[in-house]
Image 1 (spheres, rainbow, N blue to C red):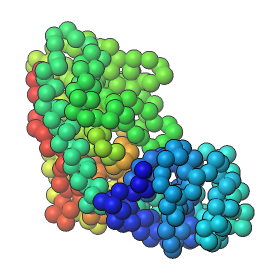
Image 2 (cartoon, helix red, strand yellow; image 1 turned 135 degrees about the vertical axis):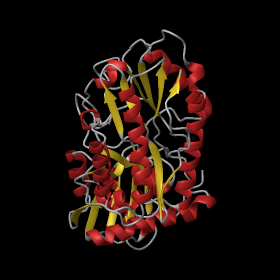
Image 3 (cartoon, rainbow, N blue to C red; image 1 turned 180 degrees about the vertical axis):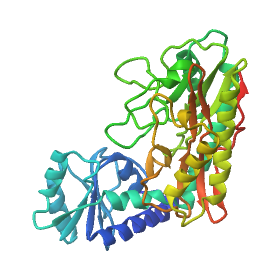
Length: 393
């Protein structure tokens, strides 16, 4: 198996250089990557092991499993991380004076074990360098995410065919999941953080949309078991309620995030007005979302629109309200930046962010739209193109 296919070699070099720029600012002369998402980002594939990235010279892959890669100069098969310093010396790679480790993601015991590999080196938090590099997507990454958006929209176009009268939200979600897998969905949602769990997405209807959850998602839902308290809970889909569908968009290692709403019969005017407000928020943020715009200003603008419409009581939840309206998206569903009042970030060209101004109307359900956007000089450009109005099941 080739280390990196020729068509991806230049792409990986671009990503490594982005990481190095942020490493240098953090004062690290090497970075040891150990987590799944960042191994994938820095190699274009996943293996059990580590990626050692010096400020100069070629990265080195330390592979534990699988032992199937061609023996190239920058690959070393190891059985444990303690072999890394010796392998570097054999390759003539200088040991670091300041080594970056993923403090924000690894456990304490993992950090301490990896620190001990380089006792002469000053440990540096390498997580920000990886996070900042991943925030801005390359043209290749954008092409993958655009493909995700096309596939996700194609599944949403067939959602109404899944619905049958008196079915439950769980039954409805299972049918949508079937469409996703047939469309090519990988069947897993990669999320960042040890406190985040989700299956293939969320389908919430009626009062279940108003059930608070423990996760940093915009919508809660009781789920079907206390071990995963989010989303569909077995509620029978009834007339006069909405069904919010926020399902998986991962087809190639990257993903898009898209939410749309369907109704069963007629729904109250309040729900329709709140949904219209969500669309208005997106139009306003799309035009102002150019490079250099403070991320916090997007949140502030959304809040002002909601206040002017007297919908604050329902915004981003009802019984429990989320304090953000969007997030970065890419390899993981919940990347940086977070679109919230406390954000210190500014938009950069080719960032990808999901904006999701949503409302929960008691006894009716959730309404609102979520799109994944690319930041361009002309504003935010959606890559999840699908009708935004409430459709009837």
